Amino acid sequence: MTRWLMILCMLFAASCNAITGADGIDLRDGETTSDAAGKKRAGDSPLLSLLAGANGSITTLATYPNGNPHPGTNAIDIGAPGGTAVWHQVDYLDAHIAGGWIYVEQVHEAGLCSQWTPGSSYYNGAKLLVFTYFYDAQGGYLGWHRAAFQHVEPDAPNAWWTWNNASAAQPLWPSAQLQLGNQTSGGLYLGTVFAGGNRSITNGAGGKLCHQGDHLHQEGDGNRASQRYRGEAVTARYHDLHYFLPATGYPTPGAPPSAPTSDPGTPPDPGGEPPPTDACNGIDYYGRCDSGVLSWCEAGAVQTYDCAMVGMGCGWESSAIGYNCLYGCGDLDYIGACLGPSLRWCEGDQIKVYDCASIGLSCAYQDDAIGYNCL
Image 1 (tube, rainbow, N blue to C red):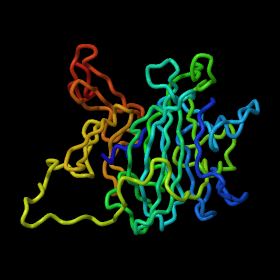
Image 2 (image 1 turned 180 degrees about the vertical axis):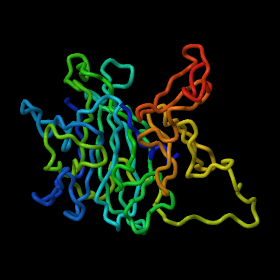
Image 3 (image 1 turned 90 degrees about the horizontal axis):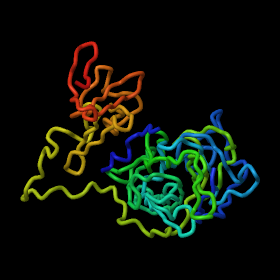
Image 4 (image 1 turned 30 degrees about the vertical axis):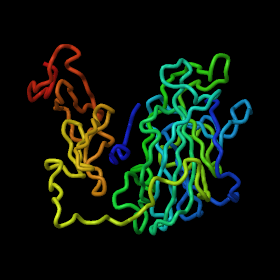
């Protein structure tokens, strides 16, 4: 279900665990310059960049305000409300990098903040390790990078994903699940920031502090971006947090499940049973919108996602993706629509959803002035 991870979400500082990785790379001081928004300009450096994972403000860099070191590999905390979307995105991919694999692993480390699971009073969200594998257009392996995202309510951990470079002259995969290098219109959706509010959560009875105010703890191999500063507002999939070069060899997950190939595959045997011409009854990969619900055809089956239920509109994104969940109201207006007992409409450029069944009513059309309503 590749489009799941292309769905754009708009859902509405503490001690964390460390990762180890490809440190020790010589990243010279002064190798980058920034524009007025603090974004490193392409072409300033051969380094790749791991971008901010959430919208918010930086609360912690190398040290806490009291001077204590911030644990983790180039750790940065981003203060963000619980429910804020968390993304993995890489930028400054040279055209010779065609794509690759991504592996997401949820870790539980005994004695640390990440050991707990939902339902525990000590749970403070999950810790996700994201391994990005880089390949050229001929399938030649170029190396890997590791990042960590902590205090996340995960969407799809412990899985492999294929990706193409949005700027590559020749993509690695005929149809990849993800695109990297296209900033805010792509990347891997990891989940949402854990909603713990302002309560203090430790890593066990009498343990160290893990959460005090909702935030995303983000780490990345390489070096922390020197232009970032405490109190700075950053935008997910836009601001550089870490600069790196891919490490050689393979990380702990090992080699990906298969070798990349741009071969579109062998055509069906003319003597065999021809494949069905319309497995999805008129819906293609570009999809369609209906009452705030996105539908599209993939892997021979209709896939659906209710954009309205996460406060988003359903509408046309691009010729590369088709219809998708988008900012704004999409196909819904003030007149609204019904999806069974679910009433959904647009008001003040925001999606509203109400379950009419919760008050013993049905969703139906009322009149031209009100539109659809609970009746």
